[in-house]
Image (cartoon, rainbow, N blue to C red; front, side, top):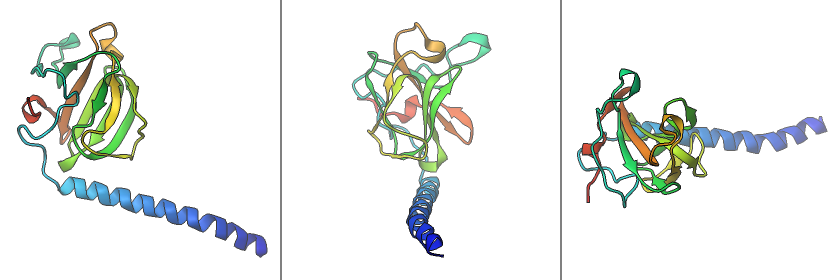
Length: 169
């Protein structure tokens, strides 16, 4: 009986902390979904000092079209989150290489691809606009091209042109 009480004493604070973290994460998700989607000129650039060009819709291999914009910068340049939100992915895929996805206001997915490396973030972490999420590279199908970040936005599963939503200096 004494051993059982000892186990409960050790487990309950841990379970309580896990429950609290889960509730906070769900509250953040619900609050994000109720916020407005980004509008024209409302988002800061993921690379504030770099020139923005609208590369949306440009032809890509295998008959694809470009579902985002490419912002060129030196390898290792810090990439900033364009919005507050919850990190939903830190990992790799075939086209994007090293990628980070942040779910922001209105449930919009903010997709950052071709990273050289990730910042110290993980899925379910909260980020604010301006937080470093990764570093410019050429991973994935961009290997050997000039280093850049591919930035895309997905609303209800469909790609939208991020260029008009980004603030231009």
